[in-house]
Image (cartoon, rainbow, N blue to C red):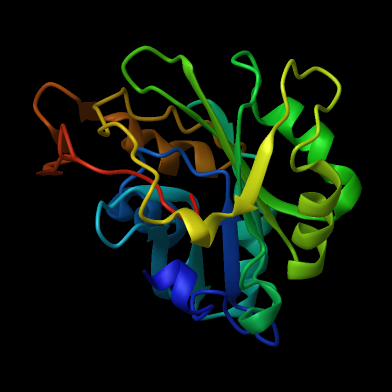
Length: 242
């Protein structure tokens, strides 16, 4: 899979046009993602990082603008934008390569009531968390008691495993088990992606009118502004990242 075999989608941090966008709703399509940033200015490329086999979104993506001024404006305008139950974060892309490889953790035996907030509280002492996710059943909303934490570096992930795996942190009733997520790519099975209402884009200032067009989505018709909808069901699920 692309996300575990190389770090190519972590773009060159020397550029002032490459952005990383975290906390994307899982149901956001590539076209919607691209259109949102095109409303700021012309872009060279855009990409939501997904599982190659299933299409499952790992919840983050990249946009490379043509002009640095537009990239900066996107950070100022779109970072903090509320999409569905997520508040996206937009920033200049950080370095990739060996630093990020192996920095993604797979955690099981989480308390059923835990969300990302509780997960982060336990793992933040060991380093900078780039992304975290607790998996839930999309039909019932009940936690699968499985989560992922992506650190900034491999050393931070190593420290978390050494200190927490097999231990019972505060708030847990049994030991949590932690492995590097890439070790679990063939083991994790996640339910299908289902239709949910498209996010209500609530952008401040002049962006608000530009964002309103994203609301014209009919989940029953399976289309978004005349474009094909997201498949109603898709087997498989997240493996190493989200």
